[in-house]
Image (tube, one colour):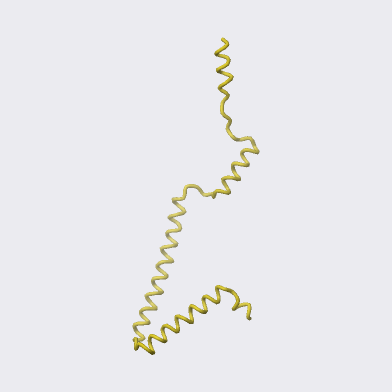
Length: 105
């Protein structure tokens, strides 16, 4: 049971919820804010969060579409190493041999 409260994410969520409830209670009790105003604030805040989640979801597909390559740097290094081990690296043509034959002729 106590292990549940030692998780930092759970503690942050619970403390954030506690502070939000305390803010609403203080606004209603001390500043005579109407509950309708706070209800609209909560609804609009929730809609804003949902809108931002949707925009981030769409933006993740846009970034993935425009990304140049599918693999990261480590995958490229592994690919280069495997090509070197398999001797698939294209070698430069030996132009010295052709130049020496034309000089001697």
